[in-house]
Image (cartoon, rainbow over all chains, first blue to last red; front, side, top):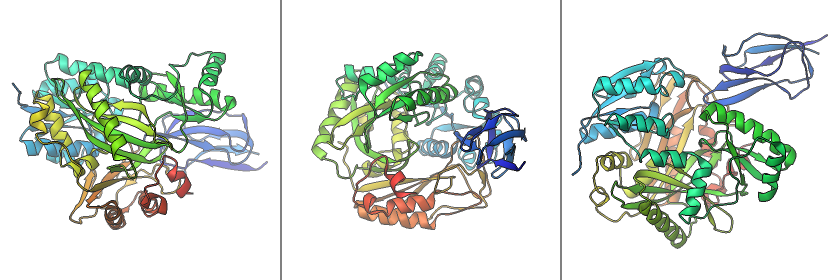
Length: 73
Length: 449
């Protein structure tokens, strides 16, 4: 089992987590949505896998490059 | 008999707060600035006669909080409110609450804000007034079959738009029926969040259109004129990036006829104060009504530069019951060419937001280069508000000179600590397409890859 990390591309805060722990996602799927400067920026799964953990909650501030979820493939 | 203002609240932040406070100071009117926790050290607060704290950083708790702002109105004894643009500028309920207190809302009558704020109602009104309006639907029903039927009537490709607000938020293109339902869902969700109204509607998509808008100026007594057009075609995510006046490669006789006609119709319908009629110009030279913004526009500066008219002072004087003929005693004329570039805190390739601390922030100090900003070096650009850092405006005798000098000014603009879109602005301005005036709303997508 390999682990991979999903990161926020921008500084902002978590608006909505649209997946759940244990859920399978495909590469390109949106895991959660970050809000910054009146824009919504999705956190996209780089590869397919199962969501093992979220490291943030909704409304948590995040910075650019911060790991927000861990996936297992 | 015109009234005179004693004190005006500027219910906004950033570059527009700075701009309005400057005008009030020049007019000798006392001013009240407001600020959230995030703007405690903002430079524009120093340009006001008094500053009031209105709450935490998130806009809904401060700049959008009507109760708090009405409290400031009462406490400060102000007799006017200038809403700027964005936030509560197009909120009819807020405008009514201000006018109910006997203070003046500096903008058109609340009924205009309400009618034009609802985009499908605005389209209906535009049709009634005999303005050219493109193919579109009313607010969409919830049932999928009915949505698809409405879309088939106007044909693909089309664009899904929120009915309750503009600013490019929640506008999504659908090229077929599969894309349509997903776009409608997403647009409705964005619309609900941004405008507290999930209504969306469809418009036929015009491919490679230009965005041309008309500056309207009207008094409280039925007189209405225009201050010519602006071209705002250069956009990313349906938001303007570069604007200019006059529009390049535009038939003066056609735009003249269209503009005079619109001003006459709005005048007879009783529009008051200033406003902007946004239109699409298609490849065949046809104009169609898009929407009307019942407020000062972000890009008002280019019109000011070519006409010599101060639009903020004009707003205040018209709101004080001055007559149009007194505010604009001479027939408006275009002199030269002005271009504005919006400097955003975002990366210059994908335009992703880039909040952070302005380690270095040195706008060009070149004479003849106008800079509008609400920031200064050392301040934090927070994720709570829009990414506009500054507007850089250059007016010269010709468009070619304006382009060259705007590029020079942007290259001299030092920003470090946040990413900025300056490299993208320079690429666009220096492109053969822009220099030739071959602008359209998809230009950025073609030039920045």
